[in-house]
Amino acid sequence: MVLPSPAPGLVVHFSYLWRNQFEQGEETGRKVRPCLIIAAGIREGETRAYLVPITHSEPPRGRGIPIPPKVKAHLGLDQQASWIIIDDLNVTTWPGFDVRPIPNRSGSFVYGEIPASLLSQVLAAIKALRPPPKATPRT
Image (cartoon, rainbow, N blue to C red; front, side, top):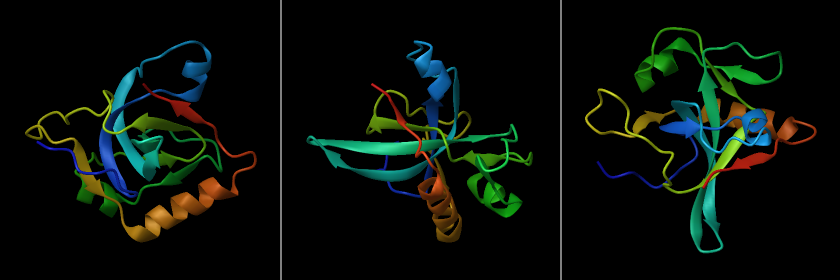
C-alpha cells in the first residue's frame, strides 16, 4: 500500500523514540505504536513530519489529551483508555524507516484521521507548553 502525504490529524503506525530514551543514547524506538502527525512540511528539500505518541499509560496532568472512545473506534484502536501525549515529539523525514505496516490490516500504515476539533485541542495544548517540547530527530 502507498503511504499518503503526511498531514496533520493523520494517525500512523510508527516506531516512536521517547525523548528520555534518545537522551540516554538510544536511536531506535522500543515499540511501534499509533502516532498522530501534528505538522508536516518541506525543509531543506525533504518532506518532514512531526509526530506525537498515543499511549495507554495515563500521563501526569497536563501532559496528555484523552482520546474519546468514539474516535478510538473510528481509528480501529482497542477499547482501553488512551491519551495523545503533548510534551514529547519526533520529527522524521517522510516516510522514513520508522513508519510501519499495521498488523492484520493488509499492509496499511494508516489508522485514519482524528476529528479537526480534537486536533485543534492537541495543537493548542502543545503551543501552550512552556518550555515548548524539543523534537527528537529520527533518521
